[in-house]
Image 1 (cartoon, helix red, strand yellow):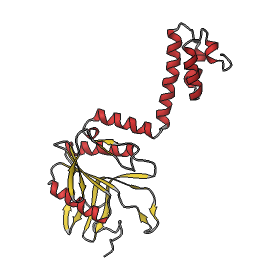
Image 2 (spheres, rainbow, N blue to C red):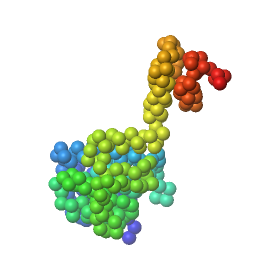
Image 3 (cartoon, one colour):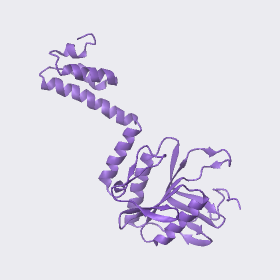
Image 4 (cartoon, rainbow, N blue to C red):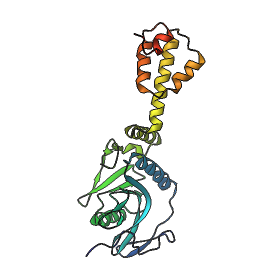
Length: 246
């Protein structure tokens, strides 16, 4: 029997908290702080690790089977419309945060979703700081030092970063570097410019304010590298900035 369309729902999205899992009607309850906080951290990480051409969604309601219509906490799918079905693409990765719910109920959702074609299903356990993945119908537990590698991510997403905000910030910064984010590149250029000025100051070479502003405003990476190299040995400011200087 073919699967029903992804957005042909058994419940009313945007209207009800109801979900249906194998014919059972379930009410999706609001989260307590530990659950809600981890939801925010996970969305933050997944959203910044996604490659261009992918979409990250929260609580996207999907018709997984004739008798199942439910949303996962965080999911990743290809952007656009799938040409053979004229529907949005099916989720490829899905994450469920587990706090008060029985783990077996969460894994049941994963089994249903994977049967339709979800590529990877993860359960993130709030209290134990564990992450499980369904593999061939069985839960595999990641080690705390492990990372999730996937083609839809620009770099591996660290397990520990899900549970530690400082590590999450560092992981997001590395993901932005991997994406060649314009904002990150601007910061790198600023750092190179400040390195040129710091080196000139250390060597006792005075830099007038207009020249200082010019150096800081420079976006030419090659020029900044050239100035930094020259600043190591040059005796004058002109010898650093003059492109014809030896």
